[in-house]
Image (cartoon, rainbow, N blue to C red; front, side):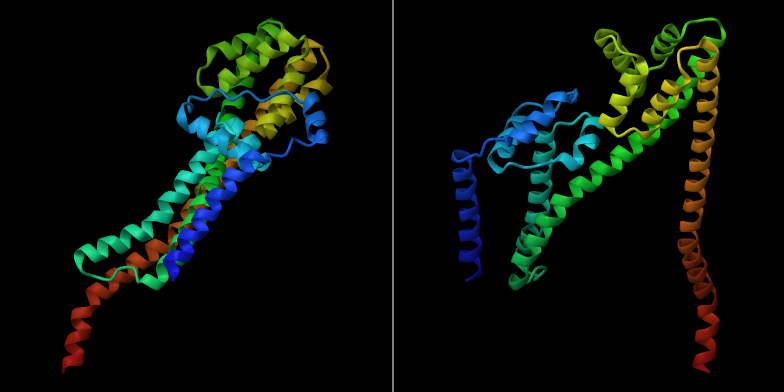
Length: 291
């Protein structure tokens, strides 16, 4: 009884996807008009080919909305279609896992997965795999933002040194971005290039990229530098102050993480010591009990 219901539900879901593709609703006018004034996020992604095409098709059929993950996807240079395919692949893997365990048990001759629990286990695996992909995405985006904060401190120190040496602010920003490598300094080069092409100030471009990628430190820097004006002395002092503040904040964050890691190790260390004590005292206790 369970297998016909499961296969029927799977077939009905497939038919719903097919029908949804023929009756795809148009995009709402309000969302289309709101997107006209926004800067288009550029995703430099090497995840193309079949996965990208399948993801685009599934998104067009289902109307999937990933606005809550937009900044994280832009920061990791992933497209929404590719992330959707990753969701489906992970969900299918965890969904098939209980079935594989049951088949393995039948081959070995041991009941590892009872038949009544197969369908609930498959459903739980599908749901868990779907959300695990989002959790991994947010975790990687958080790590990249922390990496960016560390690179931003280095970048501001380089800019401060160049400005103190007599270079102009624009020249110092460009030269400092060309010194380093990695994705953070590539981002500095890109936003400065966009600022030159669009004839806007670097701080305005920093603010736009900070909002688009969810980089709060870059947004704060842009706001601070816009208040500093265009005077060389004020800009230099503001850069030095902001660099010191970010460096102190970074050091505090590292110390907090180290303290948290040390506290988390207290439990395993205590269990290890308790096991060692039991191992040492067991022979004596067993001898006393046997008397």
